[in-house]
Image (tube, rainbow, N blue to C red; front, side):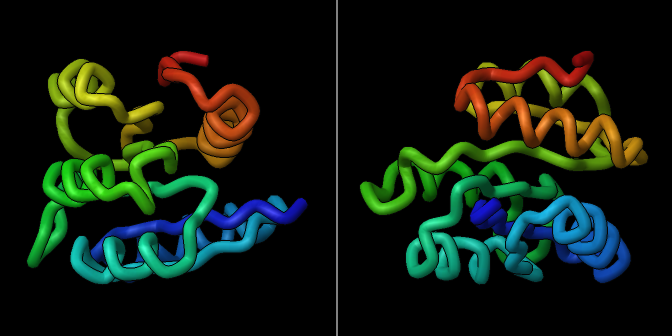
Length: 129
């Protein structure tokens, strides 16, 4: 499997968990610690999927997503959310164009199933798979 996933989360523990789970499933994972770093990496590395936290310093997940979707280099990269934000943000995020919304804490199986579905379909994925 040669799938590159870029994760952006300011929390070291969250990034480490995502790194372990995703790399353990065979994905190549890159890590960004904030939104600005995520944008730079996405523009340079062209990942197959971007996993964003909504709450990050410098530039939050909403602002990152908006920038990604207006840049011709990154506008076609699917983006999903893995966040501790309230479920009320879920509907807004999916309507805005995120392909999936996974709430923290999550089960590893659920996360991997959601990612596999996103990568296979490149369409909107409901969290309740």
